[in-house]
Image (cartoon, rainbow, N blue to C red; front, side):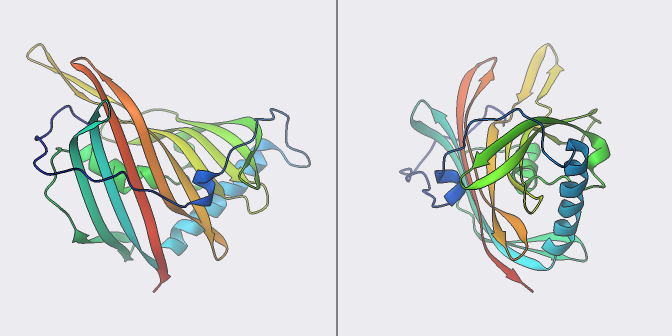
Amino acid sequence: MRVRWRPILRRTFAILTFSCAFALGQDGGLDPSQPKDITANAIIERFTAKEREWKQLREQYTFRQSVQFQAMDGDQVVGEYRQVADISYVQGKRVKTVVLAPQPSVVLSPEDVGDIETRASFTISSDELPQYNLLYMGQQKVDELHCYVFDIAPKRMEKGKRYFQGRLWVDDQDFQIVKNKGKSVPDIRIVKKKKVQENLFPQFATWREQIGKYWFPTFSSADDTLAFRTGDVRIKQVLKFTDYQKK
């Protein structure tokens, strides 16, 4: 986000609570041992192929997306953005119908909005794999799931494009992503007339739940402090993806 907001003119409301089982569960310790009876490269091939299948299947579904974004000064809310929208896909294109959008008291950049719309529910399918480096880190339990863990980073960054950098947890039975944690990159710093314009982005985590044979994003959250040159800004962000229905 950029450091710019309108003063709040109304009483702020409580942070959204959530009941996502994965979000409430505790991750186990990371076991760095190699996987048995399968290579790390084979795991990558299997889960990125599953991601490609899921992306195609996702276009057959509608769902509701709820967003709450807050800029904080300590524990005090100084700027807020909320939106509830119904999402569908028409001929491969994402269509959003806004059902609730109070007047925001924080100004989000186009990159902020794009990250909320796409990066928070990051996918990496086999056709996107050439853009990224993946490094096997080990095995770990996420709630009751046994997962393979990979770190992920873009191989290179093209101007005007956004990427994900962080960590993925892949279920060892379905070979699908069940959690990802990291941030959208790159952070943006532009020097104009000896002044630096900064657009920084928070760390976030997204959890998925199984719907039919595939794992769909259902909850994403961030609570991070961004170090701007003009001072630190704490960001809180909650996204919910609910009411998945097949068309």
